[in-house]
Amino acid sequence: MFVRKLKLENFRNYDGLELEFDRYLNLIIGDNGQGKTNLIEALFVGGFGRSFRTSREREMVQFNINTAYLGIQFHQHGIESQLEMRFLEDKKKSLKYNGSPIHRLSDWVGRLNIVAFTPEDLKLVKESPVERRRFIDREISQMSTKYLMSFVHYNRALDQRNALLRSKSTQSALYEIWEEKMAQYGAQVILKRLEFIKKLNSISQRIHYQMTNGKEKFGVEYLSFISNENEPDYDTIVTAIINKMENYREKDIERGFTWFGPHRDDLKLTIDGHDARVYGSQGQQRTAALSLKLSEIEIIHEETGEYPILILDDVMSELDQHRQNLLIKAFENVQTFITTTELSTIKNDHLARGKILKVIDGTVIEYDTAGGN
Ligand SMILES: Nc1ncnc2c1ncn2[C@@H]1O[C@H](COP(=O)(O)OP(=O)(O)OP(=O)(O)O)[C@@H](O)[C@H]1O
Image (tube, rainbow, N blue to C red; front, side, top):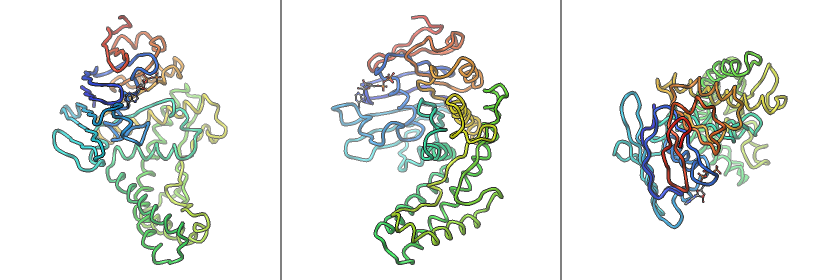
């Protein structure tokens, strides 16, 4: 798939913008603070329905203005579609798909598939489990609305159980209502994660192997409170969650929150069998993070039959020539958006085949390709 057009009104520092993109490569250049990331953020909202920078939508609406508009036209399976979002002051934002209203965000997420790679993602390996869970949850959600719904329902039930724990209630019947729901939705979440991680493991292993010229073997495993070596089925997971909740209820009341569950699971990432988080060098950890992110492109392609769009926000200068080349070569057919302050960080032959968009204080000027002005 590819994004053909982006339209913004009063979005961050863009008063009004209509931009047509190149099918393959779009280089977004500009000095600091001009609006490069704001553009990327707009695309990201098109995919995930929310920003990667803030959970407060108000921040995306231009200072001193009450409403903002975001429109994205994109091609998928040869058909052009349109997503529109209007932020309204003090009201729920309005969403449209091909002109018809959408009432739930889950009907928006995943229509435009995006893989975004930012300097933050370079820390995916060494950061806390929260980041790795966010990574898998976001990626699976954009491919599966069912997963997103199970995830939302699981978290609602978890919030209810945590509220009971904080109130120090000892009424088992009250806990059982929510624990049952946590088990049902939690089992769906875990099963889908296991399926995703299996694919992620085999694809990222191959990509990592290429990136390290065959020197390193990368591995991804799901770290969970239930054993998953023997590919547990739905009923086994439901029973395991219910038992865990019941057995640890007293301890959880002391702690004031639910200690076990898919909301606490993690990914174990290994390089040559050793935990990459503990033993990996900074360079190895970055390569591993890149392998994970790039694997998503292939997984989305496998699942949907279309390549997602790829966003590389400010990461090119962090990658050496070899990794840059691999990145751009490996995904020649993927529509790619690259932001950078320095065109010199991008190899010349990559510049010859795309659009260069120069951002100056909330306006965009199209440059000639091949690095000219
Ligand atoms: N709600 C808003 N209304 C108007 N302007 C905003 C709003 N939010 C952010 N800005 C402005 O947008 C600019 C930042 O844009 P952005 O983050 O896209 O910069 P950038 O070009 O990616 O810079 P860098 O290279 O430093 O990352 C700042 O000048 C900021 O004041």
